[in-house]
Image (cartoon, rainbow, N blue to C red; front, side, top):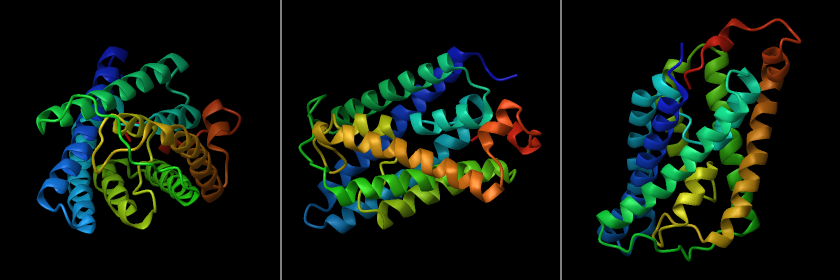
Amino acid sequence: MSPALPRRALAEYVGTLLLVTVVVGSGIMGQELSPDDVGLQLLENSTATVFGLGVLILILGPISGAHFNPVVTLADWWVHRKLSLFDVGSYAAAQIAGAISGAVLANAMFGKAAVTWSTHDRSAGNLLLGEAVATAGLVLVVFLLVRAGNARLAPVAVASYIGAAYWFTSSTSFANPAVTIGRAFSDTFAGIAPSSVPGFVVVQLIGGVIGLALVAGLYGRDPGAVAAGRVKADPLLADRTL
């Protein structure tokens, strides 16, 4: 049996808090260590994120599935139908609260004001396209791992994908509505202007749908139909750990 919802929500809160602390904190550190080299700042930021995310998935996956991302939670609800809509709302609220807390914590650790609204505009169309690609790829990686029975490899595979997507997407791969909201609270290298947040969230949701469509196409059946019992269930779907 899975842990009770309060424990799972706490895991999602703590995991997202620490993830955003890693992202924002390493972004600030990169700025301080390499003030004149944006490429090196990105390398420092992405490297810390890869290691931090991998560890967080490893330790918190057995409790909540280590979503840390409302798009992944919604996709999990659609595919597996094991989460209720109340669970989805609880996960999303915990993820968003955790993301904001993580940004505030990172700001405080580096002697900045707890809340410093980002002025880093990310509203250009090419950046939105990058976010759609990044999120679709993330959903594809996560759910192909599950469908292939390789969910145990998620700490390495998901973290590796995010690290790569920092570099191959124009947006540097936020791929997460909660993290996007949290990063608006820090006017640093990793920040995003509040005015840019809605656009990112919309294309992230679109990317999530595209990712699920690709999973369905690659496996030749509708994951939602499988979960709802309209076709014979795939035993691989029993693995909830993401």
